[in-house]
Length: 355
Image (cartoon, rainbow, N blue to C red):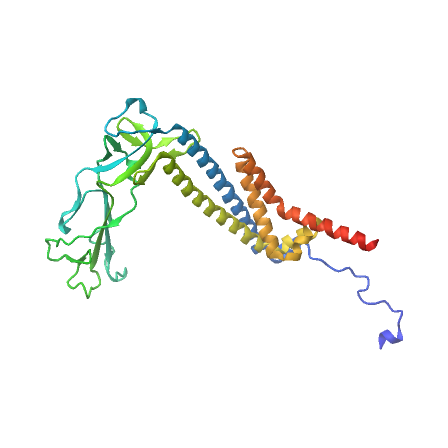
């Protein structure tokens, strides 16, 4: 009725500009989420940068070690001219006296013997905190292949434990044997609170075939430090050539590198999701990036995280492998190139429509 009687009256909000929230307003509205997102994004970048630096350093070290290693054909003779150098050899594993637990009747000629102790239904509030027995790892002091003695660092690499299976009954009556496990219990089938179960396992059994890459120091094998700063010390079961050992080591390092890459990318992606509102404002203000919004903010977050990840990776690899570094830069720029191409096509179509 008012508009009918007074048609020339000014319209409410006719001249008012449409308000668009600024970055500061978004920060004020969700500052905690934004701060967490920025920290997570920066932490992901830091992780990727550190990981790539480690990957490049490891690649340098393995390449250096591969060129420096000296194959040893006979382990029965120590070559003095190899002292202080990186050597490779394969042979039969020898140990000193068998590692034994007399009370349980267990004796294994191995590098390590682990005693694992478990207590049934142990509750801290009701029972004493200390176990009568503790989990222990016994280590043989003498480990060798031929005349080459294994140093402490090389012995530590024996970590693949195998369960000890024995039918020999313990001499003590309070210890019972069932299915390869030893029980400190009155009744194996009905254990009580506080009863103990003991399990034995070994690593590096005598007479196994092993292959080693390490530095010869006298008769002992120790880690070899490369000029890049990494230590080279390898132990594999079976007879492997130098090439096979280094390929296996490279494969292991690649799996670890890719795992950290995935974790770093995920951290950046989650961080970008936390600040997606702010990113949407930033992207929308630049025409070259605006076309990314047509595919949704999830695509924008993935594109930004992937691009930053590739660019950070390229910083580490450009000096060591320039071709790979260049490819990573191109991969990091792909979302921006994609947006530029779409923008160019759209402007070209609009020109044809005007004509």
